[in-house]
Image (cartoon, rainbow, N blue to C red):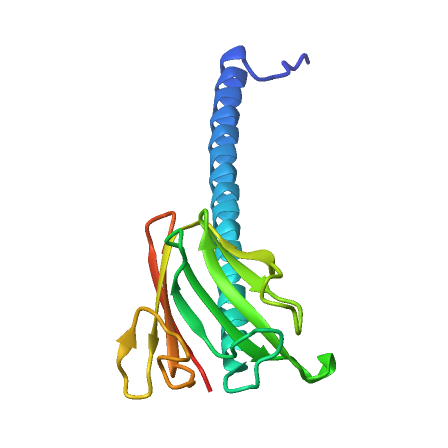
Length: 191
C-alpha cells in the first residue's frame, strides 16, 4: 500500500508567512510605543525630581535665614530681594550653617540668569568685593518672579532689611515659568 505524504502547499506557507509578518510588525510597534512612553515618563520623572530637589534646597536655606547679626567684613545681615541691574530677579540672605560646619553664618543667594536658577554661595566671612560661587540648581526656565510677605500679610516685589526694620519676611513666593509654558508657584515659609 502506498501512502501519500501530505505537506504544506506553497500557498499555505505564504499565508503563514504573511500572518507571522503582520504579527511581528504589530508586536514591534507595540513594543516601540511602550519603550517611547517609558522614556517620556522617565524624562518627566527626572524633571519633577529636579524641581523637588531645587524647592527643597531653597526651603532649607530660607528656613535657616537669619537677620540682626552684627555685620562683619562690610556685610549687612538680612534678606535682600528684588531686581538686579540687568533685570534678573535675585534673592540674597544670610543663613545659619549646619552644626557640622561650626554653626557660623553664610551668605546665600539665588539669581535667575539665561533660563537657569543659580544658587550663589559666598565664603563665610568673605568681603563684599568677593564674587560668590554659582551653581545651577534648576534649568529649563523661561522666567522667574518673586515677592516677599511681611508679618501683616502684605506682599512686596522687593525686600531690604533697612526698609523692614531689620526683620525677615514671613514668606517668599517664587513663580517659575517653565520653557514648556507651565507656570509653577511656590511659597517658602521663613521661621
